[in-house]
Image 1 (tube, rainbow, N blue to C red):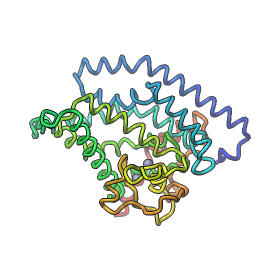
Image 2: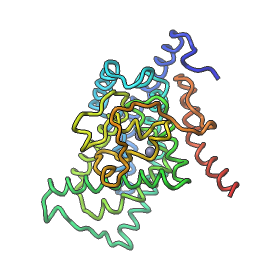
Image 3: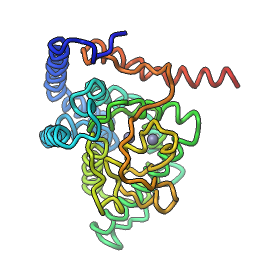
Length: 328
Ligand SMILES: [Zn+2]
Ligand SMILES: [Zn+2]
């Protein structure tokens, strides 16, 4: 297969422009149709859950702030790139754009129904139990506690996704990226989202956080984890003692064995320090990727190619789990 880097610059530029036009057309269509579909579902199912699921798009491609954020990061990447050839203008970023755009396919179907099952468990056997912390300590402190709890559960679920071999097969899709960019955080397999939800959904409901506070936390997390995936040469100086950084998360994605199984944090780095999984070096900017030579890695930013590759990447972990199952 032809590597994108081997192609003439003009052909590559044409492919980028074609991808961008397709993206704009999809966004325009989505802006028109998604609110209508959402309204219909809300009317039919009365679903606060759907509102939760729809957040992923309303916070990103339907949000002008997200586009400004992408532009700012792209400019910063031009000036302070961690590694040449990565970032927003890479084939990997074009592929991750598709992951961002097509996420609603699974969010509005499989994950939507799965969250309903979790909600049934919460409302059924758990009788909608809530600590109602807000009534005791107020909204602001509850938001802080909920953020700490959610971030800890993200750390824990990430740790588990690395340690359980079948879970790793799905999490491996996120790690398959070889060109780090602010969009890489969108490359998450829907099975992985279901694993994360299983671990963190019920504890979050038990804390009883208001919708406004949870929306704000989701908003802050999307932007922050986007930032830590950017191709930026920074360890944020002393801030790194408190939070994950583009440098520390790059180490998490590293191809070098000495970096593996470190830096599992999503926003805060305190859990990795607490559980001794923080990598000590704060100045390593390694290459990233996975060992699996059979993984269908993106080769071209052309719309047909990234769409085809997206579906191959969705299917790949199922094939691997099936192979593992046959071997055992
Ligand atoms: Zn990971
Ligand atoms: Zn990552």
